[in-house]
Length: 170
Image (tube, rainbow, N blue to C red):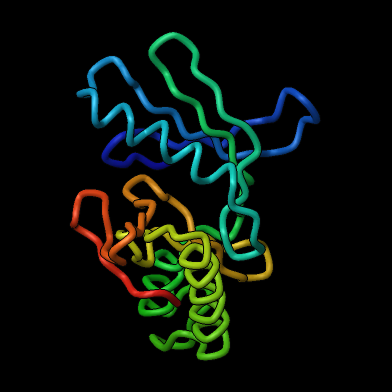
């Protein structure tokens, strides 16, 4: 279905209930130590976030050298695909114009999801239309937290971590 820097995403069926899910697999064998940690951190971060505008984590597992992250299936595709179709006059577009109501719904949903991430002291660091996934009604969910960072505040109030992402409180 899709391929990213660290993994692939497949449309799959849940063994538990037969529901359609998204399964992200990451081959850990070829990764450096810090890359392996980033992949596992994505699963951990996603598992503790519950919000209507963040892709829902269902399960995670390691099978040999493969990390699996099971997430809700969002049939609406991405905001990126919707925008491209709108620009070409396809579904969601009117002769080359994107639907303004849909654009606002996506924007506000993404913003709501990002506010929740920030309230949990998580910075996404790769917000783009390809990481905004749409449900069947066109509501946006922020996903692909592969390079998100937990913001750590030290006693002096400065941000810790790798220093690449600094943000004030939301």
